[in-house]
Amino acid sequence: MNKAKATALVLMTAVLAFGAPQQQQQKTDWVKYVSAEGRYSVLFPNQPEVSTQETTASTNEKVTQHLAASSDQGTAYLIGYFDKTGMTFSFDKARDGMISKIKGTLLAEKEISLGGYPGREVKVAATGSDDAEYIALARYYVVGDRIYVVEVVFPKASERATTEKVAKFFDSFTFVKPK
Image (cartoon, rainbow, N blue to C red; front, side, top):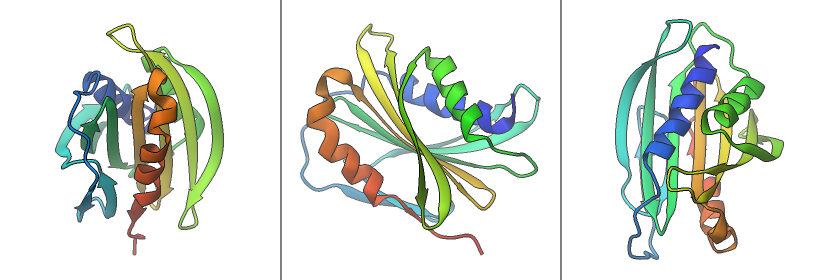
């Protein structure tokens, strides 16, 4: 397993560890979050928690991942990124690793792009530690030597009600092209 797959797994694990998101008061104004170091901006439903951690891939290579996560009304939103210095990233391996780690089922997949950079969107169904059914929508982008994972996890039962918020989050994500 390469670093990209391992990091994608850890990002998804972080979302699941985030647990069933806490119920919060509904807000109408989202917060624009800008990561100068991450070279991206995005709208979150509230101020995200930011963390950085080093993880070890099965190849014993260290990968530093950066994460910004927020939750609102049973839905978790996250942006993760890492640099793929000296390694090859595979959308297929990232998808397979995510599905394997959460013991999920692939519901849909499509190629996407943002700013001319390649990406992939995957929709996965999984059962949480609370035995509830969840949907994880993840978008992976390769921008130069950086991999971005933009993800939303929500209860399957609220999929229709969540559609607008998911679109708002995904559509607000922008990055600064590397020089």
